[in-house]
Length: 363
Ligand code: APR
Ligand code: ZN
Ligand code: ZN
Image (tube, rainbow, N blue to C red; front, top):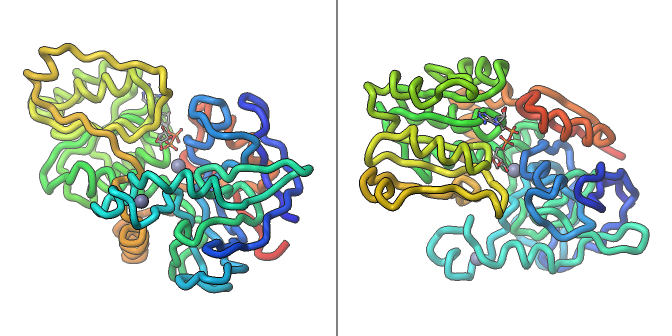
């Protein structure tokens, strides 16, 4: 028996329930969570903007301790500290063979097909194969990455989604270079990680756009050279900061058609537009045939920071250890599992950067 926050109906609050995890099968690992970040994708699933099978246990940005492993598990053992990987790549499909594990076409289906948990006799689904809004979870072996024991769990948790997504978008997807100009729309946990990635990459101009004054101030502290209020004329402000041309790179870290459209306009001819936010399937963006040709911009989607997590989690954690990434500042709140609905409400209102659900060491 373990306590978990269960999504039974989109729009309804999560209900805290006692759930029964299945026995740890071959290729599976049982993890006692110590910290789980509240990510906007959880909010989108809970509110129905992103679809997911239900009933389900959300939470996909987690870290904890391995408590049990299945018969053939070789990469971790009980007592190991791990960060969850929400794209547990299969290693064998077309995309995995191309070293693009973030696009693995079996990860989601395999994670949902594995035995997981029941509540009141009803089968539950672990959101994104993680189910981390719970004291314990049962995941595929490939959904955990071992981490050094001196890493704080709350930092390890954020590396499981927001940090890798944002940092990876800059370093892996856009390949920002020293001296480049960058604009980031949306400065939540993901956008602030883009700002830090851009600073790490040596971008000369880093413009952070958000509706919230607090987020803009935090972005400035974490490396933004300039900030713009999202309610103002963002295009004029960015052009004024980029010799009238527009930025080399624009990152959209909200997940809305309107702000993707803005991001496109903020780049120079031949610039790079990166869609990091996960928007609704029915939220449309319009481009004219002429501008797509004439502006010669690249418009790319970025899933999970185009990261190979077995390489990028350790890399990011070592940049944290050396002080090159200030991940502590991303955390603006710590809560018990029972308060997860309030944290989702606050995120919806744009309040706070990252709230982390913190779990006690033992139950
Ligand atoms: N203009 C500028 N900023 C905006 C706007 C807007 N029109 N609308 C929202 N924002 C800001 C909010 O104020 C908030 O700071 O965008 C930020 C979004 O941050 P979070 O809600 O914390 O979301 P985060 O977890 O960072 O995820 C961002 O990435 O992984 C995806 O699904 C995730 O689509 C989501 C995106
Ligand atoms: Zn694969
Ligand atoms: Zn996430």
